[in-house]
Length: 515
Image (cartoon, rainbow, N blue to C red; front, side, top):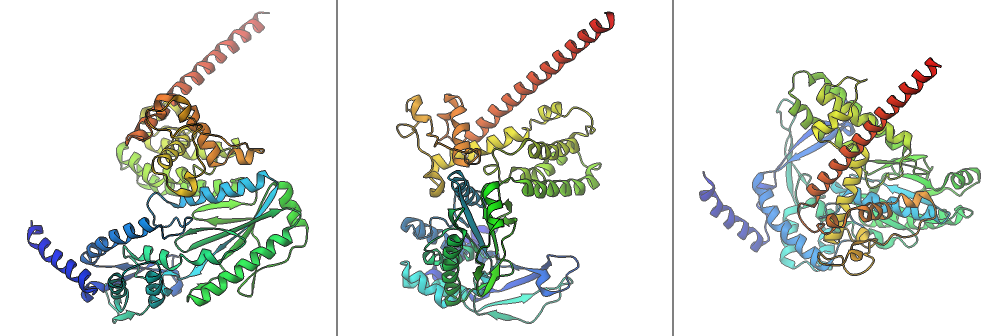
């Protein structure tokens, strides 16, 4: 109702702010609410500060952010392996690139040393003057730098307690504002030159999550550690020069390889991995971007982690399940349980039968919660009734849809570069052969399970009339219908085989009794 009155005023304020290079001071004010990370919180470190900003400030930010993103994308400023807060990039795509690189090393009998570096309060320690200097180096205009400097500097904040009590005002003198729209992008620019110091390692960035890997022959782990230590020393110097602090207690290291070579690594004396005068002891498994990676990529630890999260979510839902209609239960399961099973679908092809069964049981338990089917009753009719895919088909759908997005958009570039059509460009009107993806040779099953091979195999197995639609917006919906039909057909075939087996068993039993 009041939009026609407010909109012209806001437009005038926005234009005046962008033209003068001054961000409105009253819109900088932040209310900080500390939420407990652990219960009960016994220390300030057990609290997570949530910053609440004014809606008007976010509207102005969105206008500036759109221009900054266009400028950065046109000039290709961000590091190619920075996946944080970028369109068509995600933690999933970053993990796929990381894990596929490890699989390639294992396939040629190499081992990989990985270090996941943790920065303490990275967003809060950004030096504003240094950030402005970097923006100028990347070609930002003086006017844009003036506005960004005004946006970042002298931001007042007040802490709000659980009963509404407020602290005195305090102005921040460094860092990008938490809860802002442009803060993550500005931090990505600030840390963008960090990978340039790495000479021997490959890197992966997701905002402030920085992971480096170094591969080499299994009989020379000392050489791998030497190269890793050299790059870690350079990273430590960069952090010191840029005012960031590396948390060595949370920084983790791990070796990857086949079972044979991992045993060999553990059996020999290896020089210590050093960072900031501290020794990093390699772990058997580490958590990276929400996924638990173990030394041989067996996914056993991640399966345990996923199963635990699913059953914790289901236990909470069961407390109120009897009071909810079926539609609401289904909505809650799709929001709170299934995402745990979906995450990492592109990573875990070739999962062992035992682990697949355990994850399928999690999905079955969620379906039973929705339909009320008892534990020992057949679950397949419930899947058909709810039009829900079983775990294998669901993961195939997610992989194919992700691949279609990569082919359609050409992003992320680090994944798009791995896929090529056998001939032609794969356009809508191309011949059948043009829609077949090339599949690289893989010596071991570990590499055969890589995303760029598994996805290409699933893609080539699709009917041609499906693949020609990959550029259309409704491709995901079409593929879901395709996998639902296949799932129902497979279920009917299994049921038919089971009935046939029972009939044959009864006939043989009768013949045995009569004889």
